[in-house]
Structures are given as C-alpha cells and as structure tokens.
Image (cartoon, rainbow, N blue to C red; front, side):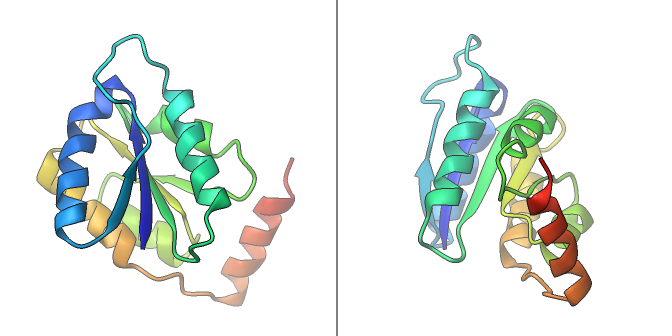
Length: 148
C-alpha cells in the first residue's frame, strides 16, 4: 500500500513519528512535507500535495494522511478535490467507520489532541479496515462525487 503523508508545522513532529512507525510496519510511505516545523507554512499547500498524489496514483489501495493542529483545516482543504474522501479521525470508531462506510482515502489527524501511540493505533485501524462495499455506501459515494 502506498501512503502519502503531509503536515503543517503543528503536525510536523507527529508526522515524523508516524512515518517511522509506518515504514517499520512495511508500508511504502512518501513524505509530501513540510520539511521542517516552519510556523509560517500554510496547511492547504500540504493538503493539496497529498490529495493530488492520491488522485493521480495508479495504486488501487493508495491512502493519504494529513496532520495539522485540529485536523479540521487539512480535512476541509483535502475535501475540496473531487474524488477525495478525507475523514477527521479522533478514535478507532471514526477510523473504522470512515473506511467501512465511506471508503475514506485520506485520514486527517489532530496533532494537538493525539499522542504518537494513539495516532499510530488509529491510523492502523484506518489502514486495515476495508470498504464494506454495500450498495447504499456506493450510492452515497457516487452522490458525493456528483456534488459541485
């Protein structure tokens, strides 16, 4: 599974820790920035990088991870792109249901409220949960993709 990951300055330390853990677990991870915790950076830049990589990928199982202070900004920015289903994850149930029901392709994490271990565990739930593929879920995703 290919994973693209990005963060602003608020999520930088958590991003670095998650990259190490994900690589250790055998995932193919590509860091899309920021390269340092620059307080002048803007989260939409990194959300755009990750979302565009997810959309362009030929890997059928590609995922993205975005991290900022609350996770909200990254989630809002990524969801501007048609075909992206970014979900704010704050516990195992939000991770599980975002994948099972909504086929989320980007996990957004709040660095301010999640520690490294908790974020890693939630991310693992997100990555390991398959999309259920129920007709009603597919219908709802198609409706999302038609929205402008």
